[in-house]
Length: 409
Image (tube, rainbow, N blue to C red; front, top):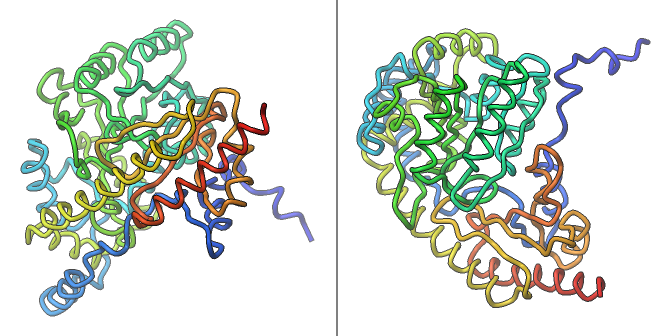
């Protein structure tokens, strides 16, 4: 019998297992308080709304719901999402600007398929979303990391990297950003920097992937305009490709996302999607359309924001109460995550096993760095655990940190 494994294609060989998914196998054991996942709170899922919506859909549009749909998405959902963008983002688009995807992870995969040739430089934040790094790497790109500051990606370093790439005649394709409540850090790109990013996009002719899964979950502070909107108001480069998902604002089980881009980009992505899954679930698209059409989105997201703010406040208060001097953390104005930094000479990677012994888990920060740095950092999720679990979990985590500090002396 031949060795089938050695015949696997290049892209799967490049693809590594998700650190988070592997960690979740460990953290599922009884007694562990986990800050590792990026899970929404299931207690907030709109179960009754979905039940009623499915009954109505099956009564009125059952044949559509259970049939194949158009590859680019059902017109019902596109129509409602266009209204959503106008109401919440001040953006005017047409159906040809949108394609519905099977969650935003498929959108990221389509971005990779469309733009990346092997060895192409791709610019990413340091740290950046692990799922994007994973999929882009599978297509053979070379990451160019740009440091992340308290108000988002360093635009000075970004221009330095772009200038250098141009001087080397490198075929760079795009910059990938999570501008709102970034995963993993929780920081938000300032509007001033957003304008600079757009200017650099035009100057260096580079696309910008604006990944926005958490934007609507803002519970504090002033909301900067989306990069897509700012581009239309200023440069109109058509270089911005925006990604949305219903996973954090509705329910991840729907597996629905949306790409907003120039019609020529959308058409190319439609062709790619035909070869991937033909179309996303028609039933789930109709449920999402009802979610928007009925105005239930506004009611639901208000509940989500109130709950997550309380959980974030609980986590920050617990960190202030239990963590020793030298440990710092971000203070996100929305989203699902908080970023914790240990002293420079401490390794969150090495401490993970000790944290598990204390029955608490996190995601090691180095997993979010394209170059493997950031060993003294970790990502903490506050959306999934209860406030009581957050208080106790941070106490346990602080115990692991203190033990580590004592051992280092």
